[in-house]
Amino acid sequence: MWSGTRARLLYMRSSQAGSYRGKVMGNGLRVVSGIPRDAAAPQGPCKRRNGTGSAESSGQSPHAASSVTDWRTKKAHDGNRDAPEFPSSQQNNAMTTTPLRIAVLGIGMMGLPMARRLSEAGHQVHAWNRTRAKAEPLAQWGVTVHGSPADAVKDADIAISLLENGPVVGRVLFEQGTARAMRPGSLFIDMASIQPSEARDHAARLGELGLTHLDAPVSGGTVGAEAGTLAIMVGGRPEDFARAQPVFASLGRATHVGPHGAGQLAKLANQMIVGITIGAVAEALLFAAKGGADMAKVREAISGGFADSRILQLHGQRMVERDFAPRGRMAVQLKDMRNALATAQETGFDAPITALFEALYAEGVDHGLGELDHSGLFVELASRNAMQ
Image 1: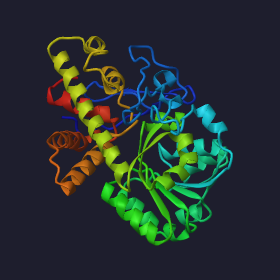
Image 2: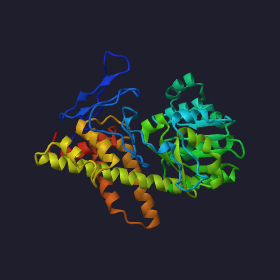
Image 3: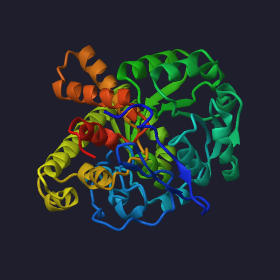
């Protein structure tokens, strides 16, 4: 097994500005990191694919628009003439007619590009992050950075959370004065991935203060956030969903899936599928390689058949290239699997497959792989089989 020290990401900045190169880790696996968002598209078998789903982490190739899906210009529901269109990011930027005052709480890998896109769409954006330095780069796009979440939201029409987890969202809202600083009638959109029960609790408590709530977690990762192609799963009242359309239009494709908490249920279902499929792809490719087959050729051979998927195309390519730079981290995938199991227990649902993969991700994190991309489960399975 990898030790925590041997599994630590090693970064080395090259002599060229803005580029990085990977280093060889203790067991020979190479971690590539720091790829700039405008890097050229990789050469290789990863092709553009059409579809309406998005795998978590990048959900698309981490390098370029070659794998950006084509659903952005389609109707949300075929045959429904009233369904909203979700145009390309260029069209999104031009569609804002009434700028909103929007607060974004949590400026990390997802929050920064999402806040930037909202500002570029013409909205007046205010931002807060626990570590202020991470939010400061937004100033170049006209975003106002605040020292407290209460200051960020006090004049906002809509506040957006991209915080770490449910307990953090609760503390920021109800212990740091954020909810009470919001204007009566304003809308809180929680785009963090938290438990459905936490989302329902937050909605009820905000309602008592005269505020409205949507839970709207996303899939598509950092590339989807940059490009405005996120899949957004929304729970809450239909009228609040309609009110949030100017926000969602700048960020991706939004679908209203039910009442409060339903957005988080959809996200957990998404993460169950992603986490389980990553494990299946990793195990299958390693199985083939152990028997003497060329892993890259096996992936190519089964592409287009019933085993094909976005996970095979995108995460499978990362496995072949040993590229585990974090787009969606192993530790976050583990959190999502545990949230799914907690919710399953609440509802009396038996989820044995998710439980199995939760244990595998947990072992990988325990062995120091938590900061790798979640396709790094490949590393844990390779180590179990004494494979490099």
